[in-house]
Structures are given as C-alpha cells and as structure tokens.
Image (tube, rainbow, N blue to C red):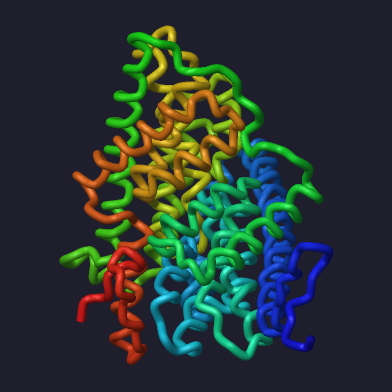
Length: 452
C-alpha cells in the first residue's frame, strides 16, 4: 500500500517532492515581488517626468544646464560606485547568464545594482534624459530572482531568464510579450526544464500588476484593421523606414561601445563625465528644437499620436537623436519606450505621404518596425505592440512589418543591439579573469561565446 500512488476517486494525485514544490514557490513569490517592483518603478518614473515637465514648462531654458548636470552626476555616480548599472540593463542580464561564477554574475546583476538602477534611472528622468524604464525593469527583475534564488540550495539556470521575462511582462502589462521576450531575446531558445517555472513567474508578475493597476492596455485600446488594396503600401514604407533607422541607431550604439578611434576617442576615454555632460547638452538642444517633447520615456507623445493629436514634425527625428545620446552617455536608462515613441514620430511625419491611411494604424506599423530594427527580435516586437494596443485585427500586417524591418536592419547592423553589447561585456569580463560558460549543444540556445 505504501508504494501505491494517491488517488482522488478514479484520478491519481500527482506527487510533488518538497524540493520541486520549494522551487515553484520560489518562482511564484519572485514573480509577485518583480510585479510590485515594476509598479513602483512605473509610479516613480511618472512622478519624475512630471516634475521635470513642470520645470521645463515654466522655465524652458532650464534643460540647458539641468540636463548636462544631471548626465554628468549620473555618469560619475555610476562609474565611481555602481559600475554595471549603465545603459538599459538587458545586455547585462544576457551576459550574466553566460558567466559561471556567482561572483562574476554579481558584477552585472545584483540587488545593489538593482537599487542603484532605480535611483539613477529616476535621476536621469528628473533631469530630462530620453530613457525608458522597461529595460531597467529587466535588470531589476533578474537581480531580484537571483537574490531570492540564494535560499534554494540548487542553483536554478532559469532564475535570470524568469526575472527578466517577468520584468517585461509587468512593465508593459503584457504577459505574452514577457514570455516571448524570454524565448526570443534573453535565451534564444525555450529551455524545457525552465519553461514551467518561467511561465509561473511571468503569470505571477502579470497578475500582481493587474491586481493593483487594473486590466489596462499600455497605449489604450485601438480598433480597426488593415484595409485591402494600396494601403498595404504602408507596411512596405514602415518596414523600410523603421528598419533602416532602427539599424542605424543600433549601429551607432555598437560603434560607440567599441570606442571612437583617434583623438576624439582618447578624449572621451579620459573624460567620460565631460562626455556625458556634452551628451546632456545636446539632448537639451534637441528638446528645445522639438518644443520640449523629446524628454522622458516618450509614452505621452506616442499615445497622443495614436489618438490623432498634433505633434511637432521634429519629434521623431529629435527623439531618435536624444535617445541615442542618452544611451551612449553612460547613464542608466532603457530604449524600449523611447523606441516606440520614435516609431510613432516617424509615422506622424510619413502620414502626409500616405493619405487615407489612418494615423493610428500607421503609427502601430512604424512602432513595431523601428523597435524590430533596434532589437532585431521581430516576434517580441510584434507581440508587445499588439498587446499594448489590444488591437488584434492588425496582427498579420504587424508581424509582416516586424520581419521585414528586422531584415532591413540587419543590412546595416548585423546583430541586435542587446546581444552585440552583451558580447562586449563578456569580452571585458573574460579579460578581467571571469570564466564564460561553454555553449550548450544547440548553438541557437545562446549567444555565441565571446571572442578570445
């Protein structure tokens, strides 16, 4: 009798051993914590942007000195005390997943860096940076799961993957996008042994966000579909323009990460804080040229364009430049939301060339095209835009646009920006003595190992 399985009527009750139950409870609790942190970051980021907008609205010339000062302070703090918190945080998590030592991973993903990431992101938004919060949420989510995982005696390879996927799911209130992001961007494969635990974490984070913020869509609910006929030309135009500019943006970030050659590169290397202040000044000038619309995440501007409201024609180009400058300056901040805003701005400028195409429809196509061009993760980009607008009638043209834009982007930048930057981080970690884990049997399961 002791060897017989337990039954409920005719149905056997599956046996779950205590270690498995403990691991599942860990991922469930981690998802809830990541969801709460994502909500906190959203609230604080909105408040920081509102404070800066109030100052900018009352004294329009304030960014000329406030933004450079904020960039300089953020870069100094990051380099002096919180090395590893730079940029969006997604390359750090990708790189950390390929480091064997927990000590080496902590240099890129840790609770200390997560706390610094939140504070420095807010500093950037308070002083006018063109940055997003979704990428930082990924690093914070991964760090949270890694920290909670220390109570589990057996190291779980899916902890960083689950935390990053949960971060995207909670930040955008888009659970499916979080899952796809984990598959396509973070791991380049779906690890079967981690799949259930990743799903549990994402669902827990998504439900936590919905329980507190309600069942909302990031950009509201869009309705309508793609008409038949010549208006499908919008797919081609959005793919070409979004993919090209997204690829150029990524190429610029990768080139700066490799180091500028010559005297200019040496000057930047010797004076990184001065370089950051110069980037801040240029961002402020972009803001003045575009009527103050380029500061912050760009969410409000993208939402206004989707709703058919007017916008400066310089918003799209200046937002692109301001985001590139914010990204290469060395301050912590993401590029997801700004990329969506740039796409919407490009659509606003293209709309007169495509009469009869609804601006909301064109904006969605350009948003997915530009985001796909930047990150070269077409499925993630398509699902994010679809979930954020709850308009599934455009899912086919959105997916076509995402795939085409990714192909165009790869003509300019052969590798997606996150993985290109992660590769360079692994190179630096190896140079400092870190051990990079060997690739798994399937090459598609990971980014290629760093160059020796």
